[in-house]
Image (tube, rainbow, N blue to C red):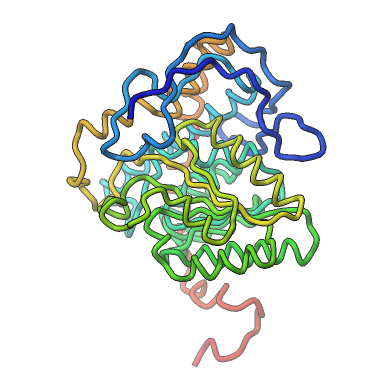
Length: 402
C-alpha cells in the first residue's frame, strides 16, 4: 500500500485520565540519566505535508517508501515527552545490542529473545499509563522493566544468572520480574500470560484500586485457546485490562499469512464485542494515544480493549534464529520506519534538541549499559540453598526437602 499524504497533526494528544484531558506523563525512571519529567504540550510546527506510514502497511511484504517513515515533524507532545521517549528507547536498544554481543561471547546462556525494533510498543504505553498499573508479557521481556525504571544493573545481572538480578538469577532472559515497578513478569509458555493478565485485572477491580493491567502477547499467541477464554471472561466481567498483540509479522519464523486466516488480528476481539483497533507500532505517538484511549475506558469501568501493534523486530525470533525466512530488502525497508529515528527527527526538526544534546544522551546511556555489564560480572551466582527458596509463599512450607 502506498504511503498516505496527510496534514501534520494539530489535535491534542489523547489523555490517560478521563478527568483532566491533559497529556499523559511518562512515569518511567530512566536509569541512564535520572528522572525526565514531561511538561505542557509542545507548540506545533507550521502545518506541512508529511509522509506517514498507514498501520495496515506494517506487515512483511507491504513496502513503504519515504524516510524517515514514522517521523512526523509537527510535534504532538512536549519537548520533555519526546526526550523521555528517546532516552527510554535508546536505553532499550543499546542494552539489547550489548546483550546480543554478550550472548555471542557465551557470557549470557540459555534462550535470549531480543526486542530490537519494537521499542515504541513499550515506551508509548508507559507514557500513557499511571504508576501502579501492571504490565505482563511473554518471554521477549527485557525492554519492559527497563522502560518502567528497573535498574539496567538488575536486568543485566539476571541475564548473567547472578544473585543480584531482578529475579535473583533464577529466571534468566525469559522470566524477568519487578513487582516494585508493576512488572508482573515475562512468561515462557506461549499465551499463558493472557489469562494471567486478565486475572491481575480482576484483582485490581476486586480491590477497587482504580488501576489496570496491560497484557502483551505475540502474534503467535493468538492461536492459543486460553486467549479466547480470557477474552470472554474479561468482557463478561468488564475487567480493566488492555490486551496488546505485538504483531511483528512472524510467529517464530512463520509469517502471519501462513498461520492465520484472519491476518488483521485486532478483528479477533470483535468476536467478543471488545473494542479493538490496529495501531502503527513503529510510531510511539500512535502507541501512546491508543493506549491512553484504552486506559480511559478501563478506568471508567467499560472493560477491556484489544490493540494490535503492527511492529517489526530486526533480529530473529531468538539468538539462535538466523532469520533466513525474510529478505534483506524487507529488513532495510522496516529500518526506514525506525521509531527511535522518528523521535530523533522530531526532536531535531522542532529544535527540541541539537545533535550534540542527543549525542550526550547516547553517551550517558552507553555508560549506563557498560556499568550494568561490569555490575553483572562482579556479582555472585546464587548459593545452592536458593534452590529451595521462593517456591512457596509460606517460608516454612514442609515437604520441600526429603
